[in-house]
Image (tube, rainbow, N blue to C red; front, side, top):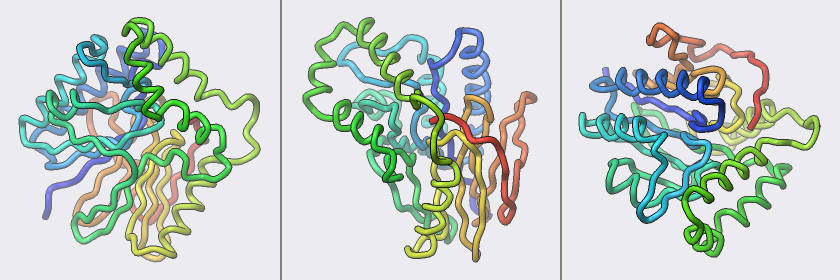
Length: 264
């Protein structure tokens, strides 16, 4: 049996109160230690941090423990691939050269265990998400990045957190259901394109759905659900990392998971 492949998204480190952040960080560190020696490959499918921007000579000290844990995971032989999310303003040289994490902008098409997977954070995939598309044009262009580098890191971090908070505000009740919209999009992709599975994040709502031997998996988040994906022997599972620091199957392939929709 091949070694399992893991998928994780939407931890949003730094988004909450100090107490909640400590709890989330401790649970994540335990999960990363748990993976040592278990898997040759971990995909971080966007938004590990609520705000990430690499300055030439400064990093956020509050993330040092997580960065060290990722470095140790890589040193123990696990390949870590980070697919940028909408809160990852700039994944630069530090993660690649100092931590050993591979960074990717945009979706990936990969093959594991005889399955062809489309893996993407999911931001901007829905056409009606016009607000995100507008913000991306402003925040991710080279001029904005160059100007942001000129700002003192303390001020830049404060500004980045403000932008992150604003990006989670919808300005009122949504007139559409993100969870259902992404599931519909994924099932359409599975029908029309040569994928065996679609793996997304972004909507913070765990979802596992199978149709005609093909699978859609939304990874949920580590803000409320502490869920992740696991591919083992060609089968995708949605799992939760429990308070007892163990893996718990939320649902196996072929079952539909129903949970309340979360925030982006």
